[in-house]
Amino acid sequence: MTATALTPSIIGQVEKHHTAILNRVLAGTTLDEKRWITLNQAAAAGAPVGRAAHIVRVAGMTQWVPAAVEAALNALVETGLIAELPDARVRVTEAGRALVAKVRAESGAIVSRAYGVVSAEDLATAARVLTTITSRLSEELAPA
Image (cartoon, rainbow, N blue to C red):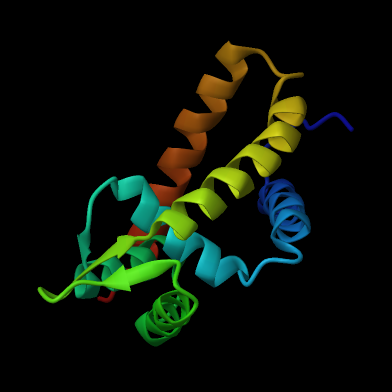
């Protein structure tokens, strides 16, 4: 398939394929997409994060309602992948870090093969374009 223009359809197809790969890797774990993103973003912070701030951040980046992110975070606490700290912060547990590493490695191998057929220059251009589009769409979605 040769694309002549970047369209919402093309972006949507790519997103659906990324989600399908993620779902394949998450199969057999206690994670779904919401729990994965909530856990992965906590792990990416590299240190404990404020519970409320984490919920707001993940909700903002995904466009999910905060209650859905909070439910995912609660499930991660219940399964022992995230621990609540006494100061209203949360941290990823050792089991959570191990699962994040496993999912990143497995999904990363698949995604790397796909992205590997595109030049680094083209990937950099695509990243700039998609970042710009995402920023503009975020402005459109912001409350008036």
